[in-house]
Image (cartoon, rainbow, N blue to C red):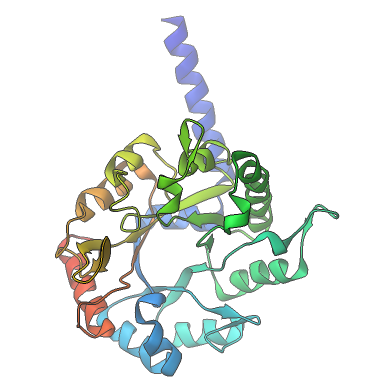
Length: 302
């Protein structure tokens, strides 16, 4: 039928265009299918006390990829970008993604440009070898209203353009408020996904953070195919003291972790699976991420 043929040709053209415009890292990662890593915030106290010793321990567990949560004064855990890259290389590891909050102070509205400090952030991310620059939260002042959020989503798109110039991609990491704050008929998360360019802004989907909000992580991944280049792999357990949930060793909680990561690999466009555990139920954090890696290996995500 003519309509179906036209649709097929349009889809074929879009697919061809996507192949041409994909950054080099994405093409390489796609051949590899996926990577498994760990967010170093999981062992934040260990990294604070002994970053090199902790990284050695993480490498010995079998992790080949890490994600940072510490970039201060142009340094990663006290190392310059080139120094930290060498540390990782010597241990047989890479850092394909990292967390640095992009806030209102990083955008100069009068110049319609990013500040030097944010440009340095992108520059250092490229030097250390990141593929993704992830902003792990959004200041409350930027989400007071839908109009405020929409204005900053334009900045997100521009950051995607900035990252693309260095062969990287910009992304956002959710917490829980994106699913509880309503903006008209949409959740904040829906507004963000519906008003950012998928080719410029990806999502790092934290399947644990939204647990308990009423949002269904598996349904969200199905609803937005191809939008989640990265996932934080995280299980949740009911807090012993207090309300709500906290993270736990994979497979010991209530989240549908394996189903979600399987869906991410199948339809979500997910390449990066990053283990993160922020609560430990009395088990040393370093031992928790060791157990997490074993579970990922059992699930076939080594």
